[in-house]
Length: 158
Image (cartoon, rainbow, N blue to C red):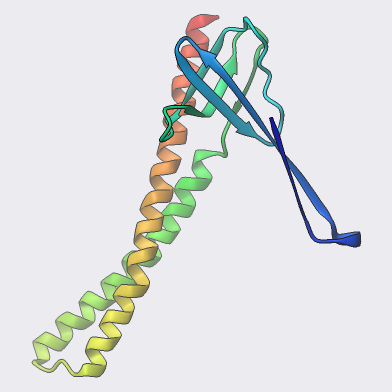
């Protein structure tokens, strides 16, 4: 199955194709989604790592077709980890400034409503950044682990 999407019009029309391949390994359904068609033929020996979706289908993070010597991995984990670290750091700085300011106000013994509003705004700003950064870093770790597993399994089979 393929998914074709377009945006824009006239001279600025942009078309993208997403290739979706679903097959079974033993009793388990596997789905590979990517910008390039995956190299999967009946009878090929495949090594796939991924995560189960809600319906029990393995969403492939990366795969190697041992029979054909082809494979694919999702975006590099370093990009996810680095981006996650930057976003997480922004969140930590926002929440850290809020806590520092709260501590300073409590030491002085005066916490005005403007001070409380500023602290709430800093936490409301920093907390989503922190949570998104943690999510990005975990995604990078999952991709890195999947790539290590694929590499180890495919070298054992050859």
